[in-house]
Length: 159
Image 1 (spheres, rainbow, N blue to C red):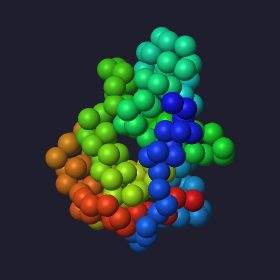
Image 2 (image 1 turned 135 degrees about the horizontal axis):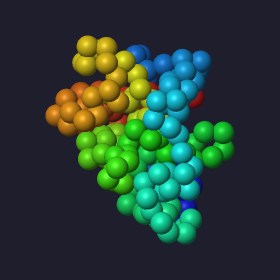
Image 3 (image 1 turned 120 degrees about the vertical axis):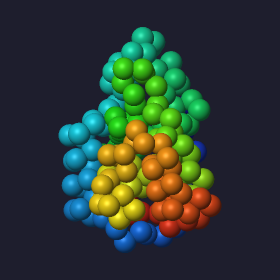
């Protein structure tokens, strides 16, 4: 399955907006922070960083085959936010994987889920979800509150 197929399968049109999630120039600042802090990687870069020693098609399949990772489209290219990976272990951070699944179930696009991770959150006393990604209980409860835990919950605008 190609990056584009995976992205289409796991993306939908936004159903609304959460006011605390920026769009436009503010969203661009979040994308820059994401790239600087954790990286936004092509499929080959992500596979290399995670130690997948296969050819490009097998790397893509390993990352996207089960649809458990975020694949965001930026500038016509699919990129994989680095915050979702446990680099030494070469796996997806379990709590992040759960939030990705929850966001998709609620109808959020991958770009919206990625922006949610980098937006200051009142439930976390202004911290960003990415800052507490290793605290599974806190991350999941915040995501459930924000994503509604049901299809069609309000999603941030990804510009």
